[in-house]
Image 1 (cartoon, rainbow, N blue to C red):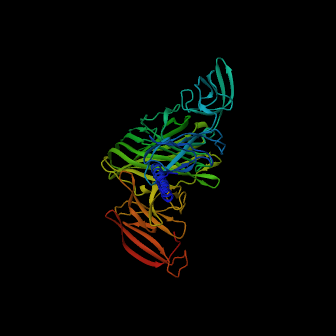
Image 2 (cartoon, rainbow, N blue to C red; image 1 turned 135 degrees about the vertical axis):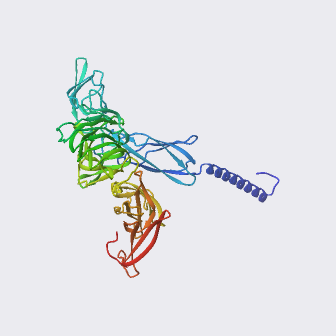
Image 3 (tube, rainbow, N blue to C red; image 1 turned 120 degrees about the vertical axis):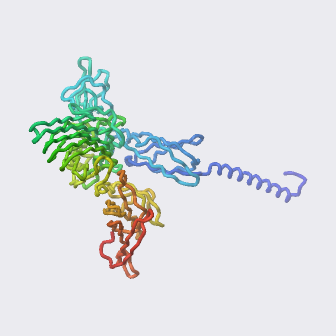
Length: 621
């Protein structure tokens, strides 16, 4: 104990020293904690993995500790503000789940992403896994020869160095030896004459790839055997009486499908929203023909079909088959001279939804961005129509998991006062299955696109029902939700919607959107009004009506903002909506008053100009 000071003074000095040391320690601790204080957070959400399957998401930033996420939902805290790199790595299935076998390789939809961390905020990072390749699946070795039909060989000869064994699956895109590609299981293997002979058992694509998620161009496109390639011309010189001519005529034409793109969302499993089998081909076809008739004429003639086989790029190539059978028909009642070219962006395919023990297929039949050049001289009505069929399949054509056939007709009509191009949907048939569910084909109904009207190529118009071809039950929208009329982005899929910001978060289904058609803006064209309700799960809800139009460029745009109302109708430039109101004496859920509001589109938004109340007339929808 120090001498020279009274005991109380020494005790006080010691206590002051301890306090100072303690305050210093606290100060140092506070500085360290401030440096390590959570500056921002990222909420990671992983979708389309089997239940219990770990993910592998790696977040990194220069000078910061790398974070690895394996849980399907996890919030990372204490991240420095700024841009972080995200790498989503493939994972291996731990156990069998339906068509997905243990050991399958599960690939991400997007392998590289970025996320920006903001101080004091939690940002969302959504990661999706997609294509799954089962184990023991590999690219087929180089084929030296085939036994049986090239489109469905019973065996192939490969180099003796091949390691393929009985029970393995071999996959190939189209080649000279395998014009339709190959998806098969090795049923036997033997060595002979310096090569290896592999016996084959053809299997559906779901055996090797139970989940396919891809949107992009077909890769390695090749002409299918004995079928005209893309861009070919068909010269139909029709003279004499072979086509019922009453005078000389000439009809020549060409067809080009352009560069097809495929959107495949195939899931034979019971997770990730499956089973489903969505398949869409997008292209920009072009027709051209020259027609000269000196008298009445009618003829119909088949043109060689356009067909190709390409592959979806994946860890192994997945063959896709596409064919366009063509016929051309011409009819006139007097002399005519026509030269025309028309092209447009099309989407043909299907989307599916579960209906009990089946998958119900709904057609996708879209047209936009048309262009045409036409020179016409005729004194009566002339019609020329190539029928445009589509056959699309995933897998080898002889063993397709999904096969879609669409019949459509493209018709050019010329009269002295008007010309037009129309594209009409005819037959729609789907065959195949996705996992345990077979696909059926409900009646498709009639769909018609007037892709061009006018003459001389200088005018353009659309059929009044063009907006009806838009699939409003599979689009993204921005609506208002309680509490406080929050602006909420939603994804509507098969008529049901979900939102990450809904309350509660996650999948929050509501009533199926209700769609009505009519003239909303008074321009004489048909528009669409969509109504859906956003509820907080209790009695509070916000009725949302949104109006859409199709512009001259074929793009769908929202007209004005959200209108607070239900049961929308459109007519003569007026939007009519309804609200259902309760008085104090009305029990919950039993409105007695119906308020009818009318709106006009003015200065970029909807303005209410009439509101009438009357007794409640029907169900509150």
